[in-house]
Image (cartoon, rainbow, N blue to C red; front, side):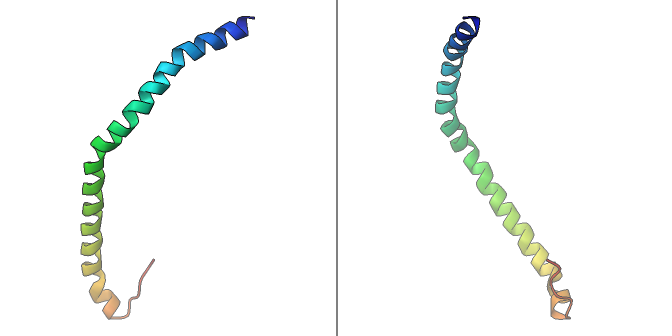
Length: 66
């Protein structure tokens, strides 16, 4: 009986948290989207710089180390 009462208490306490998470997750995703796009752009710039720096070695026959 005590287990059932604890389960009911958990159900009552947790469903508002689940609904709150369900509402806040898309908002957080939208707020963090610009930072993800900036990260993708910065990663692309670093890959371009790496390719430019490694170009002489690849032209001379060093090959790719990947």
